[in-house]
Length: 228
Image (cartoon, rainbow, N blue to C red; front, side, top):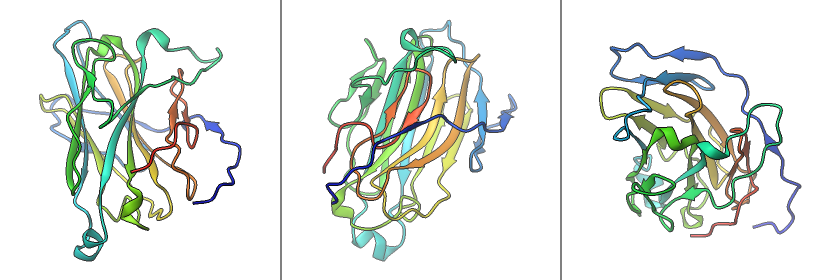
C-alpha cells in the first residue's frame, strides 16, 4: 500500500437521465449512470426500504482467491440536508456497516443485518423515509481478496420497498485496483425516492472509505481508513 496520498476531492454526481418506474413494474435494472424513482408514502412511519449487496464471487478460480465484500450505507439525515448553492458539509460518522449496525427504532433509522464472510448477500434496512436525506450504498473489498474487481465478484446493489418495487444496480467497469466502490445513491429529498447508479471507485491502494456530503455529493478517498 502506498503511503503517498493525493489531495482528495469531492465530486458532485453527474447529471443522469431520469427514468420513471411504472407503477405496475415489478423490477428494473439500471444502466450505467441512469436513475429511476419509486413511490413512497413518507407520512407512513412503517414504510421501509431494503438495500442489499449481492455477490456470487465470480468464477470458481476467483472465489478460491477470496471474495469477502462488505456492505456500507453512508447516510445524511433529512435535518442535515442543504440545498444547492449553500455550503455542503461532510457528514461525520455517517456510516452503517458490520461494526456499526445502527437501529430501526432511533436515529439513524438504518440497520445493518450482519456480516457475511463468503459470497452471498449483506442487507441493510432503511426506515422512516421522512427522516432520511440521502443514503449511499457502497461496497468494500477486504485486503485478503487480493487483486480483483467488484464486477468480477459479481457485485451489485438491489434496492426494494418489499411491495413489488425493486431496482437492481449493476456495476459496469472492470476496475481491479480499488478497495471501494460507491454503487447506488438513494435520494429521499424528492417525492418518493430517486435511485441512481453512480459507480465511483477509490484510487488504487486507498482504503479510505467514501464520504457523503450534506447535499448528496460523494467524496471518494476522504473517510476513515478501513482494514479487514
